[in-house]
Image 1: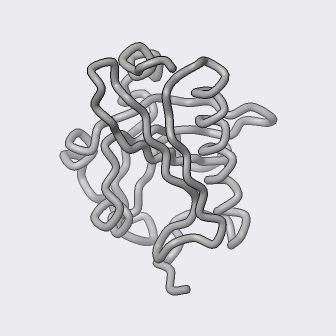
Image 2: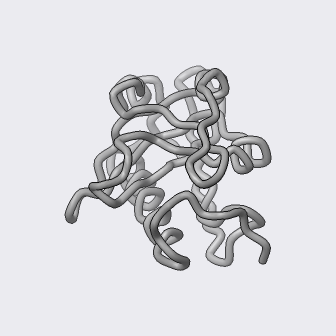
Image 3: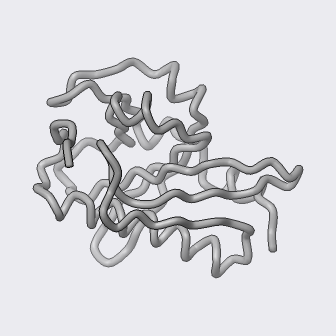
Amino acid sequence: MERTPNYTALAEPARFETGYIGELCFRNGLALSGYRYEYRAYPFGKRDRSGSDIFVWLKNGERLSVNVKTASEKRRRMAMMVPEAQFRIYRADIYVGARIEGDWCDFKGWLTHDELAKRPVEQIKIPTRCCAYTDLHEIDKLLERLQKE
């Protein structure tokens, strides 16, 4: 399977496991809180990405795709990072920034696709769109827009 270069310090499969943890925590949070969602796992990955697809529904019935971007190392940037190749190929409506801190997955916030598209592309080993966690919308602002089961 061909993959783009890695901007993280993690080697395969650890970097994919980190992503899975964030996605599963987000999915579990949706399920435990009674939100309407759809979850599809891709244990063997797709070209340039692995993980899962997550969909949520807004109160108005609109279905949105969610891409959870998870970081794990404290010395790394305090930002949500999306490789430009993934951003162009696998469009998501919502990008959620998550960080694993000890035994806790902290959801730092979110941006829409259009908001992330306005962010500059930085060269972090590979072209990458970044947004500081402090510049993300609060996660509660997303959850209050979601439909319950």
